[in-house]
Amino acid sequence: MALWAWNVDDDRFTMDERGFELWGLPWSEKVTFEALAVHIHPADRDRVRAGFAATRAIMGSYETDFRIVVDGDVRWIAARGQGEDVGIVGRTMFGIFLDVTGRKQAEEGHELLAGEMSHRVKNLLAIAAALTAITSRSTATTTDMARELTQRLTALGRAHELVRPLPDGQGNAALLGDLLSVLLAPYDDLGAFSGRIRVAVERMGVGEAAATSLALVVHELATNSLKYGALSVESGTLDVSTTSMGREVSLVWMERGGPLVEVPPEPTGFGSKLVARSVSRQFDGSIEYDWSEGGLIATLRLNRERLIS
Image 1: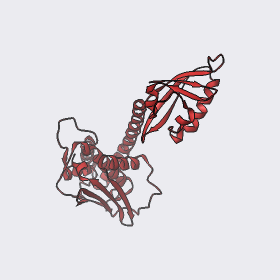
Image 2 (image 1 turned 30 degrees about the vertical axis):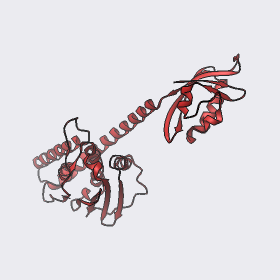
Image 3 (image 1 turned 90 degrees about the vertical axis):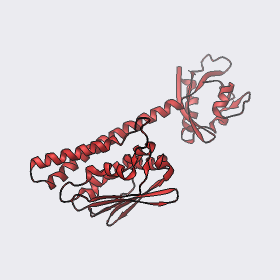
Image 4 (image 1 turned 60 degrees about the vertical axis):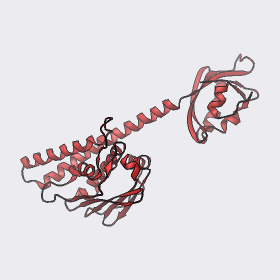
């Protein structure tokens, strides 16, 4: 928390030492509002200027939140004070600056979690419906259908358990091939078309930190394939393979035999953003999509050290 005083006539601020530290400025007796405004995030600058000007007409207390940029880092600041300059003493208004970066990050985390949970629930409902349709095509009796559908949903439950962090102290999550096989098992046929999902990857471990992120990515790709791609039809196939080059591991997701694929205008849905963020942040990598006539080919380029950690 930092204390400030603002002279409404000459537009100069006086702050304590904590205030200058908060704004990343060397201490001085006074500082102009414009000197502070240089550090305000460009998206918030005009709003903050208007907000401070408006405080002179506000009766009672006020609070406004905004971002500042200090040495490339973004901080959230809450400015609080008393408005209305009727009867103002010495033409000076007083208030405080609070560093609320932690609170804002927590709020953003909660919003992201709520969005992710909503997305997962919708996906699970879509998967259950699609698995029911697939099972009905490959079975002759209601008894067979109930048995196979139960097996698929049970496998889906095991895969879903991987889409969350492991408790501390459980060691490495799994071998890459085993992890992919468990995640993709619910989507493979159990009847005449069984074995249409093929996993051929190098033998390597996946660490605790990487397992959840990789499971999220594979789960999202499989869900989209089940709804729109090769796994949505009986004749479709999926091959997952890896190639290595130094510190980089390329995981190739190749769909064939599915419906005609149309290139989406831009992957802006929550799921696409979730995949891109997971690959970039967790694996220091990237994902590329090739919407070929034969089907989608997605190439994930992953940092090996991040994958095994």
